Image 1 (cartoon, rainbow, N blue to C red):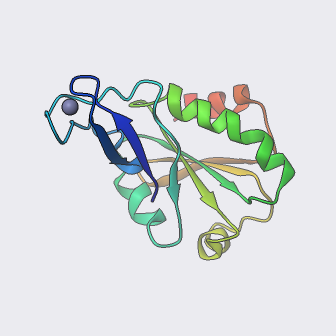
Image 2 (image 1 turned 30 degrees about the horizontal axis):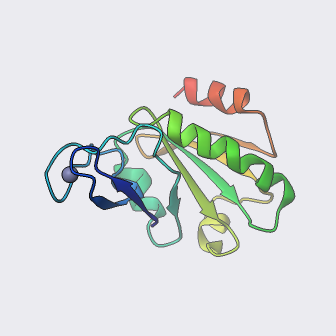
Image 3 (image 1 turned 120 degrees about the horizontal axis):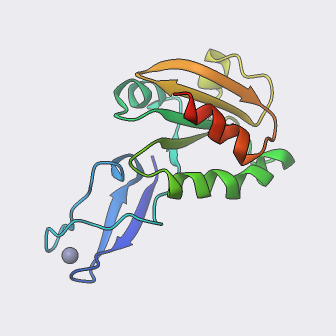
Length: 145
Ligand SMILES: [Zn+2]
């Protein structure tokens, strides 16, 4: 999984925060002040090894962007997915899976084209949609979780 570097607003020290812990109200490792994650959250990068455990244990509904780095429509979705991760911190978890590197999970979900977006709640797949779509459509799906 990916890690982000966030400066503490109290002491200024940089903290390395695993992306899957950005939802757990992280504290500064130096001064123990809460780290302000507003506008800092990023999509959680998941793969074959950690996908199932993460989704099963996720404390919030999860949207997953299954993408491939060589897919043009996937590229157009990157800024949308990044913005949703920032805007939905502590409400929804936004995750992504590079299907070119994680083929087991792509086969498991029978993903035939990218981008494909899947929506999970309490570990269960609730809904999915394929192709480059507008943020409004993704937001509507999240709204039903
Ligand atoms: Zn600090």
